[in-house]
Length: 472
Image 1 (cartoon, one colour):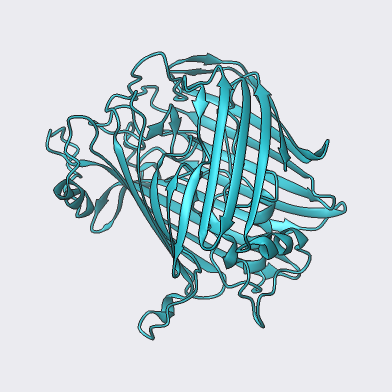
Image 2: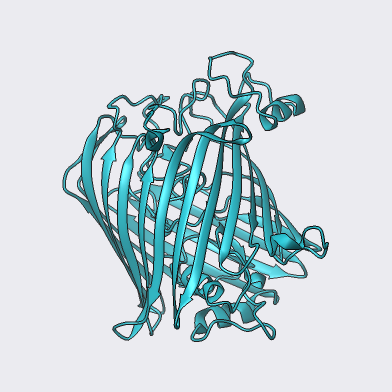
């Protein structure tokens, strides 16, 4: 769980309290914005009827919004450790390595935002002992923001998984463009779409993979045509890399679908994924209920995703035991076309040219369970009045259902969290975040009923971690 009170002009994935309060405000009709694309610019939190009004009982968001857009700066020291990294992750990001010491400095003012982050990591799973994750520079240009850096992202309505882009893997270094204030279009021809948001990003994957330094191009459009309904369209293309074309014609061929043959042709321009997600949320008294789905296609047919994987979920809020709760239940199926009765294994997150798969430094860029998996998760958060957060989730997964991993591991430097054989396992994750010694302490534990064998080796049944952040 992300500690509160950062100087960045956005709130990123990992802050479950901010997400819950923002989403509940939208479901109650107090804020007419979509909250299925993260990071979210803080300036999007107001916009309710009658002015910049926030959800009742949201002092956390109210305070953060007051800070957004004002010249400000902060610095932080982070110290953490764990016995080993967990396999299953959700909206809240896990730390990497058995030990970590990091320093972060952030500043924003006059339309600029700058974040510098450096960490020293002991025994990292990707052999990267010095990391700059979380660093960025961004500039507001009218109602747009352009930026460069390495920041976490989460595309989609899921609380535990995103099929197309999550924070399970380390952030991909690159550049991006996103809308700043997600209001509706002033054009009478387009106003029907309601408040809309758009993100365009480009980046480069790591060098130690079967196709070194492959490029990533992603885009996401979200619409809110009427109160409570959020619709998202996402597309990610993997292309280029060493000794492969990266020119404009290659990108154009991928954009118009000239890379869907899957026949192993050397001139195939790249690998691409597309997803459509829908969420509908509504009020139940002072609380909310939402249902959502996401469909991911590895190819397209008739301009729609083909070779499909699915995510289904529901979420709800409550106010019990002296605090606020966020609940969710989610099911994912990343066996392509499994719901159609024509299963096609070794397709989701895999590609005949990019044989290290849809991974970055050994972790899936989409759902942490990876491809060829059926998994159901029940989870929830309890937000204490004093600012602390308790999270619990239970997952039951049928991993690597065809018992035939396709991912190619380029060497021993990077640990690939891809199951080596078919297995069924239950995972229990517990997290607790609280103020401690004038800072913020996160404690996390994950246990499984059995060890999981990955293509890079076996891991223990238990993962225990702690991380303390002190902000200046």
